[in-house]
Length: 292
Image (tube, rainbow, N blue to C red; front, side, top):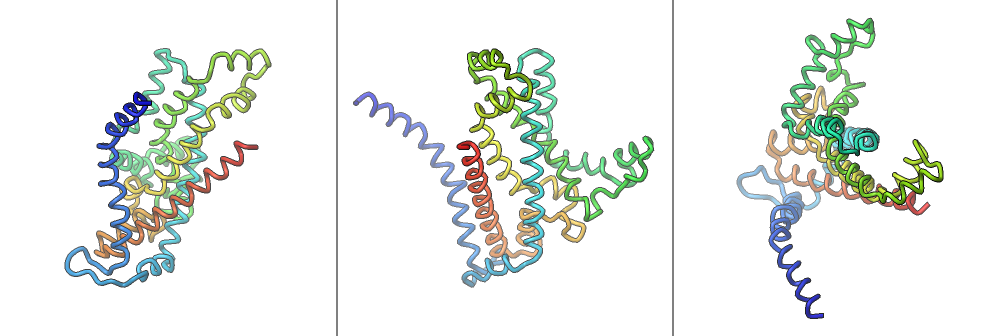
């Protein structure tokens, strides 16, 4: 018992510095931001207490709900784009040959690039005058498909979803490869004997064995998508006419462009609450599916 107590004490002391830093720089600012949401404040000068007025204005602003709808598109694109693509690539590239390592590095490479660089690159790809996408479509006889990919409100949210998916496949690929490599070889051998190959192996063996990893990936997708900002800000700035506005760009514009720090704090608190609801809902649905 004394030895176990010493081990627990040692672990607690080892975790204490990291936990203290996390509390100081993550948890405290969250509550501090929620606190500022109760005030009318321009970032300087005196703060005026206005109660829930900022939060009431947030839920009554149609631009906020448009940004929320756009965020849901990004969330759906991330979950149904990044996760399946990363899982398929992990099944193909989980071996450790030189070729597989090279392809894994290539898929992970966008994570090394700055988001601003990725946004500029895809902005040029989508450019209606000099963009390579429209150039390719014109030269392969698909001129009718040429669009103003970032300027057309009907398609621009789907257009910006593509670089977001492309830029964030790498981490999920590494996550799934690690999970697949941890599947017991005895389970794999038994599956082969029972004829579970191809899609049956994926559905009956791989997915159930890495289900907890998939749940973690879904949480990361939702949390990352709800705070998406940099790529959208570089490519469209939330325009045209708020057609690509996200919750993070909406919060940024209100906080730093028109200096409504109290209102921006209320928006950031709402983003956190919505993220928690979406994460909890996804985990509840996946728990039921896993139990079935």
